[in-house]
Length: 186
Image 1 (cartoon, rainbow, N blue to C red):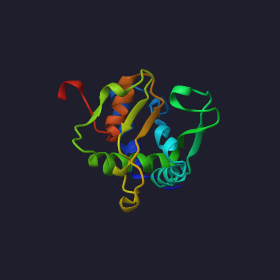
Image 2: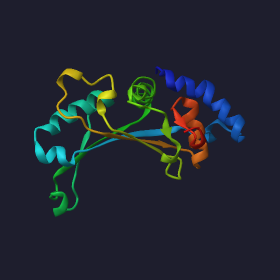
Image 3: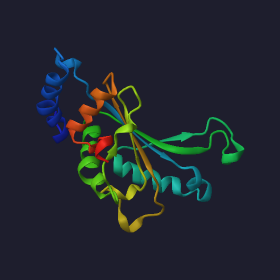
């Protein structure tokens, strides 16, 4: 089984550093990234043009490397003009090699292309060691064909870790290479 560049960095650099910093006795106790979930809300896009679902699905498939699942509305909400069973989003769950490849591309290629980028917010941890990133324009990813862009949509990326605290997860993601900025440096 081949290892990605990010997985090798995790095993060779991050694990020894985390063992030293937090005093873990066993390698299995060191936090790791469990999965990455990519979400796209389709709200107004789907309401205006029904054909956009297939186009957006194809673009997410190109970005993530696997086909997204269509999420459907569980309730009818008249203010949002939704009905039960109506498609409201797309979701992809990445694990293993695809997860590490996606994180590597996102960290080293896509995130530096964000306009006026000054770093990811440290406050985006949820209290249980998971981190969320909101990307306003999907066109920052290199897999997107810039000539055939229909609509520009935002993407939410959730990184789920096995860390017990936000401090451990922060150290893990920072050591892996995610450009998270401290509050006092902003």
